[in-house]
Image (cartoon, rainbow, N blue to C red; front, side):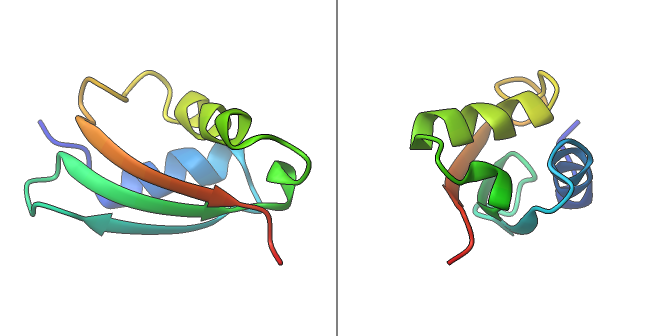
Length: 77
């Protein structure tokens, strides 16, 4: 069963409470999403570290229920 956009946002915000999360369903199938996540917690961290934080927030769903996630992360400007 595909993962709902609201569930993705909920999991990310649960782990990164100040995150501003924007989700786009790329294929309309609930399996391929693009996400933009902006959080002060990313400041000073490498892009890889930022992405790892988001993947950890998804609690193992990446590559399973959530097939593909094009991810953009940054600290607020």
